[in-house]
Length: 324
Image 1 (cartoon, helix red, strand yellow):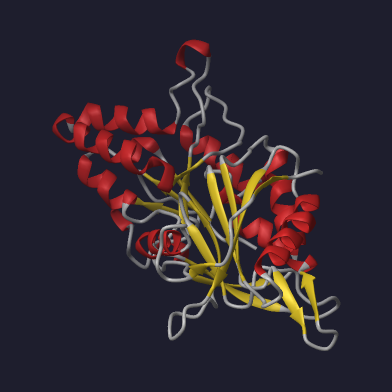
Image 2 (tube, one colour):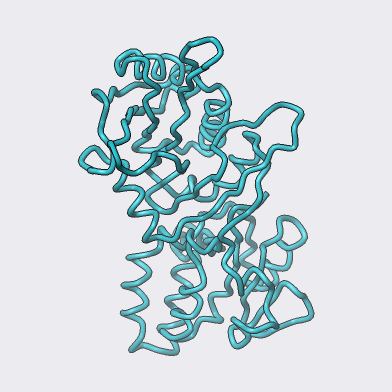
């Protein structure tokens, strides 16, 4: 299940500042489209930095020197929000387009933007961008997808975002639950399984977030007991390299409800209508996963910061480490 579309762009198709603006406006974590950094490096040690970004700027340099500086500045500002690190094979003896077509047979892009159209229905020229001649994923922002509520589907959907990020906030009111029938406080294994699967995927590419935070709602069992129960349980699902912090919140009287569930990062964010936990076993359990526009992501990030005024911090927020 794709949470984000990979839109491969032929660097030589971008010949001016206007071309760059057009393509750049179509991509980002909030729109559900990202440009893979393809190729991810140059042909040898001396030119290893000659990746996709370098090729685009060289193409603009050759055709629109006046627009080069603006393209460079925007690339520096927003590269992290628009470009996906790519681990794909690239033969520098062949053209970019030949390489892209080979990839379509091995690990397909959602769409390819090239200098000219060809017979392939996934290819769109820059001139046709935004018309009915382009693949559907280039015309409509993919804001909502229906997602099976299992750990693998969650990890698949958010991994492109997480592999580009250095800070992540897991936000769900129900990492701890009140079992009303038993009158006990319970740690949600379903939530922990999703986090563990995500951490495993990141470990596989040697990616360790600089900052990891968990945000949850108090369940009325005593603030200190609740936060300590969460820490003791969750650390068993995190790798030793992960350093995290736990936040327990109270809703303010007549204030905003703590209802929404998010995975927020410094580059993008997603929300889940029905929680970020593993669903019921042997059930067709789904959630609507929606991508957050950058303005909303930034606001929600601030909403769950220690200095915010939306909720009340219930107790001191402990730091802890994984033990897996």
